[in-house]
Amino acid sequence: MRRPDSKDRLPMGGWVWSLCLVLTLAGMGIAASGSGSSSIVRPRDPWAITLTGTVTDTACGTAFHKTLIHNDALCVRTCVELGAKYALATNKTTYELRGQHEKLYDYAGEQVQIKGERVGKSMIMVESVVPVIVEATHRGK
Image (cartoon, rainbow, N blue to C red):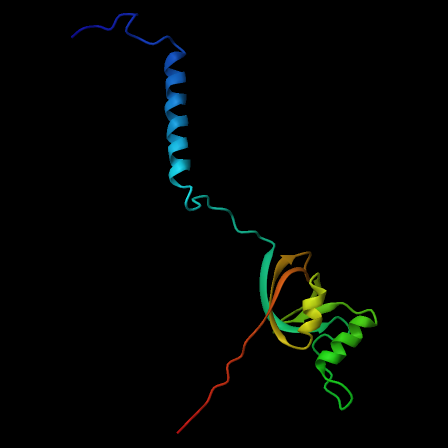
């Protein structure tokens, strides 16, 4: 076996630079091959929340007022005009809602799905509001 002499070997820092070059080129190849689809896994936002419930207000909460004079939607809209905030009543909790006031006005008293970011324990900064479509079940003989 031939023993490598000093001219066959890279200088002390040379192998480090060669390794960096190889890793950089490999990283560029991985980035280029993944350009069609995202390969980055992002952690789930711990404050993001999606809930389904009924649009109500902070004054009435879950005590919906279906009277001879007005319905739930009108009650919610009236209470909000008088200073209450929009809220979402779920099975367990009532959340105060911030943002998307036009959509909340449209869906007052109705079942919706809210996506947003939790701000504190019982407040949500609303990003989207979509109505929940309840399908009627037809029982035929």
